[in-house]
Length: 452
Ligand SMILES: *[C@@H]1O[C@H](CO)[C@@H](O)[C@H](O)[C@H]1NC(C)=O
Ligand SMILES: *[C@@H]1O[C@H](CO)[C@@H](O)[C@H](O)[C@H]1NC(C)=O
Ligand SMILES: *[C@@H]1O[C@H](CO)[C@@H](O)[C@H](O)[C@H]1NC(C)=O
Ligand SMILES: *[C@@H]1O[C@H](CO)[C@@H](O)[C@H](O)[C@H]1NC(C)=O
Ligand SMILES: *[C@@H]1O[C@H](CO)[C@@H](O)[C@H](O)[C@H]1NC(C)=O
Ligand SMILES: *[C@@H]1O[C@H](CO)[C@@H](O)[C@H](O)[C@H]1NC(C)=O
Ligand SMILES: *[C@@H]1O[C@H](CO)[C@@H](O)[C@H](O)[C@H]1NC(C)=O
Ligand SMILES: *[C@@H]1O[C@H](CO)[C@@H](O)[C@H](O)[C@H]1NC(C)=O
Ligand SMILES: *[C@@H]1O[C@H](CO)[C@@H](O)[C@H](O)[C@H]1NC(C)=O
Ligand SMILES: *[C@@H]1O[C@H](CO)[C@@H](O)[C@H](O)[C@H]1NC(C)=O
Ligand SMILES: *[C@@H]1O[C@H](CO)[C@@H](O)[C@H](O)[C@H]1NC(C)=O
Ligand SMILES: *[C@@H]1O[C@H](CO)[C@@H](O)[C@H](O)[C@H]1NC(C)=O
Image (cartoon, rainbow, N blue to C red; front, side, top):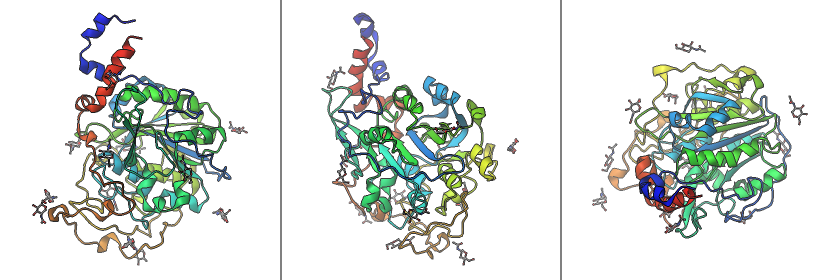
């Protein structure tokens, strides 16, 4: 036990920088937890397995806002890298969070440069269209989301780290890719695939985890409101035990552990990413892969594995969509060698024209229907898509802000109480963030736990 005298010497800010991890799952990741407001809703139906060329299941876990160099000094990440392939040239696409999540399933971030409430038109296709065309099951598992297919901007519940502190916002819409797309949010059957962690526990026990999964830990466990040490503790409590659970990880499972973006906007957007799971060949475990990858590689690798069609977006742009090397060599896909100064600078924010950029607005265009992605199949053409709206025929970008307008997709779809402006947490430094209201709840908790 540390003496009270010693604690008195710990400056408040130091205590604030050492929030202590508490698992919201007292009985582990495979048991329902009373701490989650969202009740279990029964397990998913088991679907027939559609075999892939390299893996039969792909599960991605996204952590937040950490520079490559910071993650690479974290014990949990170092230990996990020994069990998989460390991707040393893996990059996020822009800042802040939401555009990176949106791009991971839609093949573009549509010019988005903020974390606002968006609902992307239903004729814009996603990876879910490609997967469902081949009967490949999918789910998005969202920690602390209250009900399946929840569509509000965020969700606030009792604070489980400190029950006398004010309620806390553990779940946010911006970290849940499928709900950002109208092609999912207007289809009840698809909404049932956006599930909470109590559903995950039941699905895992029923051996009903789908073939494609997106996992979003809550705002403290994913390092967004905390730091890499907190996220490491969560990984030890959640991912590490699941790696030896055959219902989660078998010899045909590929797991990607990655970050949405780095923390420092003034350097390029390199993130720490590891490929894990039984599908990683034994001889590659503990090795590095220096091929250039981005979040679009997630799409192209999945397309290559199941010979899917493509979205005809950046998933078919060879520069930014290299297929994970051990998959590329198995399926015979030729990657581009992008190194040094050829690596695009993707630490830009809000200055890329697009339909979700109010200052450089252009309408949504159709995908390039003539493109071929790594899976070789056709470009998916959504219903109500006007294929003649190619990028070439689009008008020049206009500044909607200058005429007091917002982008149409920010106000259409199912809106919450108000399409609220984002909390600009990404633009503040670690210290400023931790000194903010979030830290208040942690500060005392940190001191209390030092005494144990
Ligand atoms: C998907 O499943 C449906 C219903 O079982 C079946 O009719 C269809 O042929 C399947 N499609 C593919 C590509 O296997
Ligand atoms: C369970 O599913 C039903 C039907 O989709 C939905 O109305 C309900 O909100 C869900 N409950 C939870 C806890 O997600
Ligand atoms: C993979 O797992 C299956 C099912 O458990 C088993 O039959 C098979 O032998 C395993 N293959 C390898 C290469 O370990
Ligand atoms: C992006 O990163 C590059 C390379 O480190 C740096 O020169 C540039 O200033 C950064 N851009 C921004 C907008 O911070
Ligand atoms: C492909 O990606 C590169 C790097 O971001 C970019 O410069 C280029 O314009 C993209 N090509 C297309 C057709 O979008
Ligand atoms: C990729 O390009 C770099 C720089 O030109 C070169 O050093 C490296 O050998 C190339 N790698 C491959 C796999 O071709
Ligand atoms: C696709 O190919 C057709 C036939 O060559 C052509 O008419 C059309 O303009 C092309 N579309 C795009 C988006 O390049
Ligand atoms: C998508 O659908 C909307 C509504 O029908 C239409 O106005 C828009 O032009 C379509 N966009 C594309 C790219 O097809
Ligand atoms: C767009 O208009 C707003 C409001 O007048 C202005 O602040 C902003 O700088 C403009 N953006 C660009 C890219 O010109
Ligand atoms: C935009 O709104 C501001 C504040 O409401 C107002 O002062 C300004 O005149 C408006 N500009 C235009 C172009 O409508
Ligand atoms: C949650 O959403 C409400 C209403 O949209 C908003 O006022 C609040 O700032 C949001 N809080 C967080 C932490 O995102
Ligand atoms: C819990 O939060 C309350 C209110 O913010 C604070 O006064 C108290 O010190 C905290 N307790 C612990 C153990 O962190």
